[in-house]
Amino acid sequence: MEKFYYSYEEFKKDTQKLVNSCREYEPDILLAVARGGLTLSHLMAQAMDMRNLYALNSIHYEGELKLDTFNIFNIPDVSHAKRVLVVDDIVDSGETMEEILKVLKEKFPNVEFKLATIFYKKSAVLQPDYTVREAKEWIDFFWEVDVI
Image (cartoon, rainbow, N blue to C red):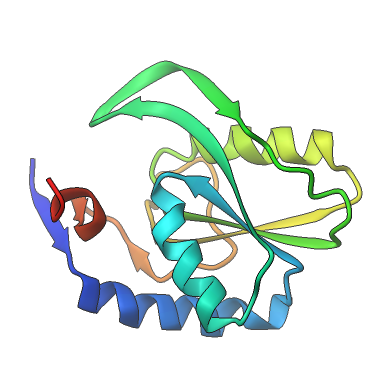
């Protein structure tokens, strides 16, 4: 499988593009999907001067292997917000994110949720509201491979 190394330098540039594109949404909260969305949401929160940065956990992959189940847990209470920007590194199949958004909308029906990612795949079952790059190969994110 072709692999693309995604460097910190590219990440900084793409994060600024993503912040610029979603700034007009004026989210009350950034909600990271751990673990892939943690690094991105941290940098976005810095750039947007936001302190309301939350995270939830989701497991649908083990390495490159897609699991048969979704495990979404540690969902923070965002009921006090009007607009929440869900942040993740990539929408791959979109199945995990579709399930996350379904759970969030059921749990918090009065909150508007939008999605921001760096990468997306055209074949995904849903597309992010804000994104920067199309993923055409497996991505080795610097935060996954540089520390091993």
